[in-house]
Length: 365
Figure 1 (spheres, helix red, strand yellow):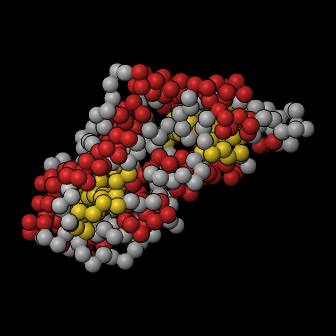
Figure 2 (tube, one colour):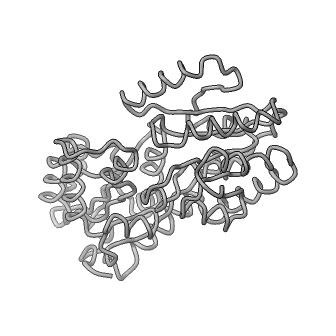
Figure 3 (cartoon, helix red, strand yellow):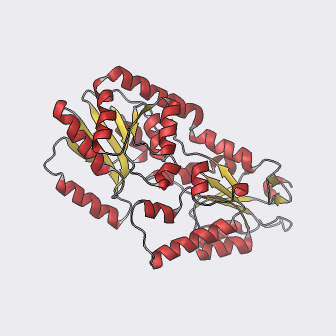
């Protein structure tokens, strides 16, 4: 036997729980690697989830320990099992939990922070290859460039499809429900636009990812209870295209921070795939992509007035908005479709300089 029978792959991935961006990346990123190698896909990354998949097949005593591809950092117990029973081959390091928390203003030198940092550092040290969503993110996180493979974020354009253009001018934001996401700034920007164009509406698809997010969202709804031009909603993944299609402009109003400068969020590509024009605050990586794709407008600054100035022309000129939206979808189809991203990543991981079907993954490129 050769290939997977000699040293099989076990892929720790997200199954069907597709709630927000991280879930989607964990679902798609190693899908082509699993298909090409016949890898055993495990829904989860706790030791109890994947330990059975690491057992060697009966009757194949010559089979070597499996290579493990994980789309998430592993806790100490899970990492110990992988290191003892398998080859920790590739980790998709799509989010640095410590820097991310710092960007949201939620970090402190407490026990939770120390645990996050220890888990991150141990997983990064254990896996041979590290997948990052962008070069700037890899540099910000301090990853070893000799071990990094860049696989950007994307969208599934079979799920996110263009919808009929809305009748009323409508601004939309899809985001996690948390401070430091630019939500209040966007609300102020649309309120400013409504002075001259009172029919403009605002759709907020905000997902609470924990107790703190739920408290934030409940408080925001209470504060805005009298604003009938603002609608709160949800965008479950199988309906995300329908929901995004209710807007005529989609906004990503991320505040300044090196973390937000370093990577384009998954929602950017889903918004582009919906064929709607994008307005983004001047964060480096999202702004670069919007400009390359000719898919929208980059605000001059981070104030509500800056956002309003970028949004207003797209509200007023539907022809321009439609053209920019079409550009964005075409760009995603060509460059940021999940199946293409996953295929390019599989090409890299299975390339002869990294992979040998008998000897295993090589240490250096």
